[in-house]
Image (cartoon, rainbow, N blue to C red):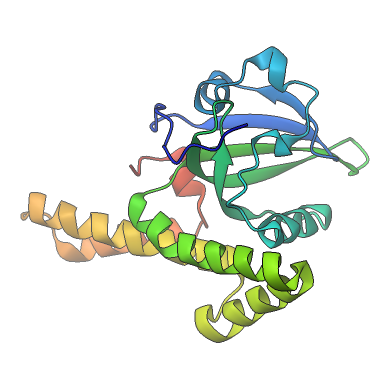
Length: 210
């Protein structure tokens, strides 16, 4: 496949939903998913989810994701995906861990939404660095750098780092709302934004953001 440095056109107001088994095999894909990735439902079902993995994505990002899910922990990840025609689209993913009646993990439900450009601009340089380290020094060295970056520069876990990027964007939106509705008390807007983050990123996936 020829990689094209061009973003695919898709409805960014929609939520992409997919279900996989514990191995990442796609069992369900909604219409938003097929429209964004340019594969049909028939083409996606039964395929590994890495069918849409973009070569610009460092492997360490996916390792951290799967390590967390296998431990039964929710995880948010910002991902650049590859379409059938070689184009790309950026999303943030939220997972629900699916379990049977005995509590055994049987699969995952992923919900994905479009990522604001300001967030992409902050995460993309990190991914490029990780990818270059991966190519030149190996995956383990890339993983160690990633851990060092999160500890020394971000001062938080990757999941917390992702939430903080969206928190910054949300606060920018709040300031815009203040300017647009100057009669609304600023304290109320601030409290509203703060309350969002007490619930993680649920507000983003199930509320109005973009």
